[in-house]
Length: 481
Image (cartoon, rainbow, N blue to C red; front, side, top):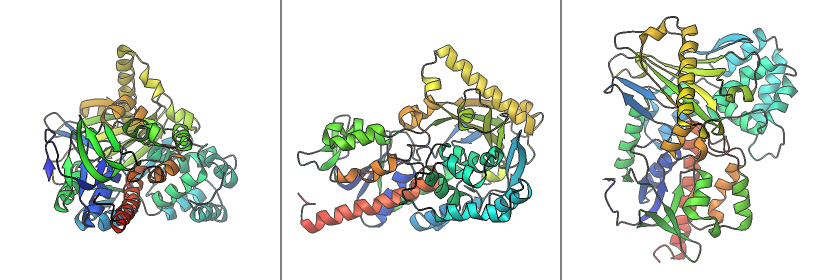
């Protein structure tokens, strides 16, 4: 059932999901399929979280938010936990390009082609390349290796900043990794992401979320948008029993937060309900970086040539994650949307520039400084795109920019953390239910569980945990109390 934002929900549920990002949506869908009663609450006016879109010029332009592209594993996840119709719309991108002062490379993002490029373009022996991939393939989340990304690259490609750029830059844009992060956070994502190419949902994010919403409703999930949860309710026995929205309580046996990890513990629940050690661990979790995007719509009737689907560009002479995060925007990635991105609509072209950013570089700007910096990143995007598509400036009839403040406003991610938390966040998230009975968390945490596939799969993992908890309540007879 779809509730309006004005409805006061009186039903009680097995589980309430706070936040309709891909983790929350996938968890809700799986649990409803398994026969649980589920309420999905979303503060925004549409589902999807950071997997979202918006329309401009009376719908003439539709822009997908976030860098498009996810691993082949999304097909299996969608087929198993959503529907074959959704999975069948996931198609491989044709071309990913790098353009920077150190090299220019075009790839299909498969392991086979990466090996070929490293050997033929960068001059690395096949044996050395294979040793690198073997180490990535052997990485296990439960290993307690202290190796960093920087140490991993130095081990296999010593002194080769250009190779580090080639291998790490896409992952920086995918989940905010840097050279100081644990190598395991890179190895798992790289193995998933760069095995069989990069994929997108053909039809646009709007169609994908629409199909997912239909699936949720078909499977019996109740949904309410524009429903911002103020409190997660906890009784004297330290058991969660529902949520509160504008003074109105909705009762449930469990609650899953798909909201920011820190906001969940520190704001919606309150630190006084957790152990001192858990509160300290939560406080120590580092939020990941944010992002900026510039949206450029091409005039109706105009076209642009095929220049690749994803184009990683940079003016910086060498690679560093500090330079990628710089307000000077030396590096940006262009997602190019051709008419076949939404073949069911009238032919249209759009380009979205993505650049990583720090929240602190934006939050203290005055209004005039903020607008000036937005104009700066817009001009950087257009001038950068002109180098790839000469004359494109005259074909653009709509342009706007999003900043870390935009991300924080619409997603409620603390400090506009586009990529969730750093590695240590995953441990806190996965163990939250051990602190409070009935409280679970599923979201972009630990880098590994960031991105579309990671978020969806984490929703599945936590769905199993919630179901086990509800089954224990049923066996003990306490579910009906």
